[in-house]
Length: 509
Image (cartoon, rainbow, N blue to C red; front, side, top):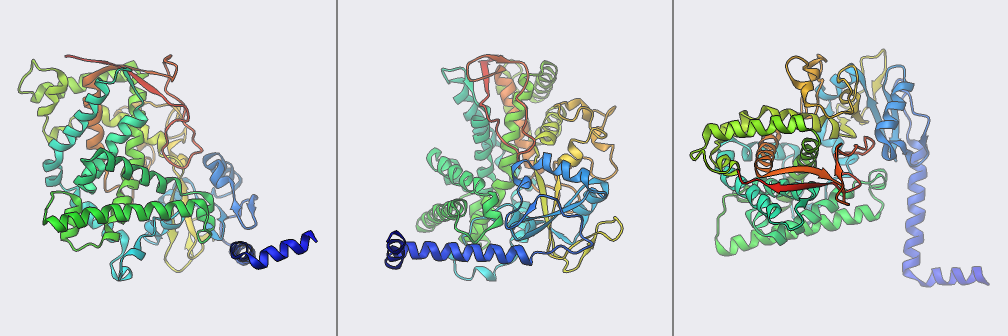
């Protein structure tokens, strides 16, 4: 009777019918993909843990450790595996790195579109979406214009004002401490929105916070399930769709208000509207810019401060650099150091902070984790340079940045933060003739936002160092002499699992 009752309920419940039908379709789809995915005999060797249906879970659970182990098992250092139905080839070594970053047959956007969980689907809100030009070209053109010299010069006073405002909040905090992975991360978010988004977002704390919340929802939706089974309505896929739709309507509302008031703004949104960009294109651009700029720049702005707080030598050298540069341009040499910085021109912000640049560079080396992604878009097999080994047509390709950034033959004591490795007498990143440092992108895809990322890092670091004496402490208020360790198995730059705080004492001179 129990079995008959179940069948009776299924036959009368639309929800249960839909659930059972979806489950059957999903299992059928997964089984078909498992039996149809085949690697060519001349592809790099298949990993031993390439499971049916899901593929290699080590790629998601312990990426760097897993990558290193598989690399060592392969005679060429290259290997193949699956993520759901997606065929992936992992490259390593000098030949693999050169092929990965220099080949015109390996598509950048095509790789990230799938292996990063895909961007939010907002095209459905706008008719004619498929008629527009390629997203990657559109993104590059818009970002290149918005990060031109005249844009930097015009926006610099506002960027400095945003940083000063954040500094004042920290100075007036009665706790006398700040979590840099919250406060400085939010500064970078605001500066990024200022350059590539809308003034209405950057100027309104509530809207800014809501935009950050939605962006982080999209970021957290790049899960193994969403990549392996993108058509399955998993919580991650639903969350990404919801956040993308909310962002669309938030920006659409700003556009409608501008149209109703005939108001013109001097910001990225206005530029894109003047170019005739549709709302879904604007949303895609803003989200893409945040992924490109915030995750690394926001996290590294905080890590650099943690490293300086636990490195007296480099903190002293940074302080000296800030004092010397400020004194060179200050109209009032008797003003407090943080006010002297107000007179530093754009050219000096970009060229006269080499110590800060070295600090940032080694933080990026350590925190640019996981794997970069591409896809074979050539329609043919691509030789890897190792015998007859090839990357199959349409296969995805990955390269773990730790393959070079954590190579002890390139970087001495590679797990240690040490800016001195970039001094001329060591020049460790130049020990490899081929792309010894990939933190700013190399080859065919250098980082378009590198100049802005360095500018905002220099401004944030200089104003923080000029405003405070500080040291690192844990959540109990105990002073820490060593910065927290990094989990190298994570997929991208990340905040430490245990919150860290900077204990600050405001400086008056």
